[in-house]
Amino acid sequence: MGNQVEKLTHLNYAEVPTSDPNGFDPDDDGPRIGVSYIFSNDDDDDQDDNLDHYSSDSRAVSHEEKPFDPQDELECAIYYREECVYERSTGAATHSPESLLNKCRPGDLLEFVATGQYPHWAVYVGDFQVVHLHRAEIKNNFLTDVSQGKKGRIVNGLYRYRALPPEVIVRNALDHVGSRDRELYWRNSECFAAWCRFGKREFKIGGEIRIGKQPYRLKLLFSEKKSHVLEFQSLEDVIMEKRRNDQIGKDAVMQELANHLNELGTSQNSNQTPPHVYKLLSTKTSSHTQTRCV
Image (cartoon, rainbow, N blue to C red; front, top):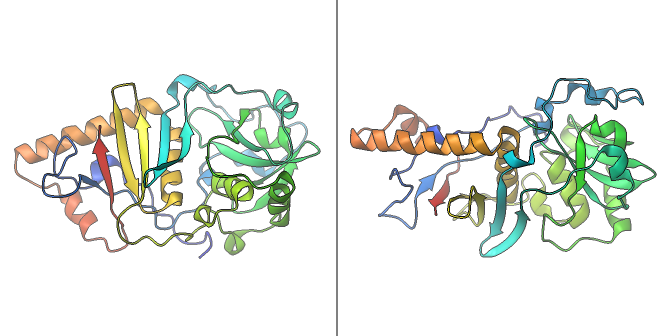
């Protein structure tokens, strides 16, 4: 289906149905919150206009951005049924592009981060170069140019799938250089880079059928005693939500959830269902997910 379909934006927590202000539904297996990404363009399209114009003089940040704040990064984990397939703790070290080059090996997954922006993923293929998906095209560029001055890190260990041999990872990446628009099978840079390393179809658009009970869970860890769990029908949907949370930051995610639960409490106290709930429930293309407050 490519990336030419009109983008459906994320449904924020105030726009989705649930039945209890605490997130529990006594008449079902669990509470319900709908978050669905049916069609979407590369989320990197929302940022980094200057990435289309690489040059050796463009390594400094040419657009205004805040330094990356690791304290605003949200710790999270992804589960497929009962198996943890992704886990990120806070505080992972980041490095300058030049320092990162000294640590990279062919086949490594790289993540470039900046506050208020989607993380950008790439595959290191050797000779100071990376392959990455940006603006609906797979490109091969120098690492220092792609970073645009952002700090980066090696993220091979975030996903817990078994990695392919380095030469296969590099070949997967290089074989798709130049692919664009309708030739693409990935929604964003993370899905493409992860597919190159692990070769799993779940990272591709439509790699899983969205029917039945949601097998994926995204656990957001705000503190030792406070967490929140969302359920999804496909891995690509989980990744879209995780990346959106990375972009807005930990504090904003916590505020969204607080506003959502407060609105639900007010709505239930007045015995009224907000109009947006009816609108969402009548949308045939939206698939619902579940959430559990722990």
